[in-house]
Amino acid sequence: MSARTNSMLLGVAALIIAAPLVLNPAGQFGGTDDAASEVVTSSHPAYEKWTGPLWQPSKEIEGLLFAAQAAFGAGLLGYVIGRRHGRSGK
Amino acid sequence: MHIMEGFLPAGHALAWTCVAAPFVALGARSLKRIVAERPEARLNIAASAGFTFVLSALKLPSVTGSCSHPTGTALGAMQFGPGIMAVIGTIVLLFQGLLLAHGGLSTLGANVFSMAIAGPWVAYGVWRLAGRLGAPAAVTIFLSAFLGDLATYVVTSFQLALAFPDAQSGFGGAFAKFAGIFAITQLPLAVAEGLVTVVVMNALQSRMTPVEGAKA
Image (tube, rainbow over all chains, first blue to last red; front, side, top):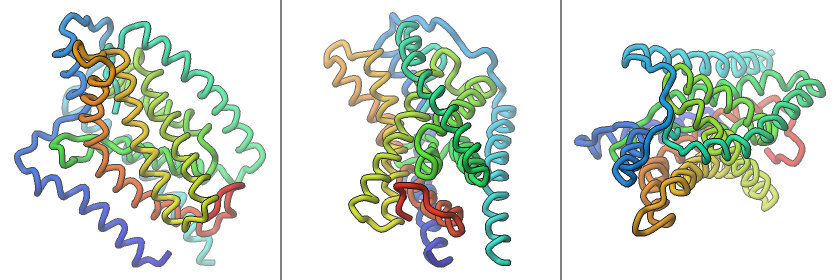
C-alpha cells in the first residue's frame, strides 16, 4: 500500500477519535469501567465488594504509569518498524 | 474494558480463572515453539506486544460521552495465531491490574478471557475466513481487528450480565445494559483500531514471508 493510503487511513482514524469531542462537547468522558461498576452497584445494592485493589495510584501517578505503558509499547513497535525499514532500504 | 477489582462474585472470578488458565499455558508453549522454530519471528512478536501495550494504554473518547481503550490484540493473532496473545495480554492486564488499579487480580481471569483469549480468537477466525473467501488483504486485516476488538467488549458485557442479571429482565436485560455501556462506546474505537492495524500490519509485513494460512 502506498504512503498516501497509509496517511489517509491514519487520518480517518484520528478523525474518528477527535469527532466525539466536537460532536458531544457536554460529555463527561469518564471511563466505561467505572460506568459498569456504577450499574452493578445500583442494580445490585446488596452486592458486597469482597476485595479491592492492592494499590491505588493518585491521578498524577496513574497518568505517569499510563504514559510509561504507552511509551514502552510505542518504543518497541517503532524499533521493529524502523529496523525493517532500514533493512529494506539497503 | 476491565471488570474492576472486586466486581465479580468470588465463584465467577474463580470460574473464569479456571477457564482462562489453560489458554495461557498453551499460549506460552506456542510462544516458545514459534521462537525456537523461527528466531526471526521475535521481532514481529515484540512489535505485536508493543502494539497491545500502546493501544491498551490509550483511553479514547467515544460518541457516547465516555472513554474506552482499544485492545490491539488482533495484530499478533493474525501473524502468529491467537495463542501467543493470551500470554502477551495477560502481561498487559497484570501491569494494569497491579500498578494502575484498572482491573485486578480477582478479575484477572475474566479480563484475560475477554481481552487476551476471546478477542484474539475472533480476530484469528475472521482473518482465516475472510482470507479464504478471497477478500483483499487490507479488508481482511480491518475486519479481523474491528471484530476482535468488539468481541472483547461483548464478552465483558456477557461476563457481567452472567454475574449480575437484572431483577426484572434477567440475563438478557442486564446484557443489553452492559453492552450499551461497553460495546456501543467501543464501536467507533474498533473502527479506528481496524484502520491503524491495517497500516501497522503493512509496515511489518513489507519484508516478511506470510504465515501459513494467512494471505497478505
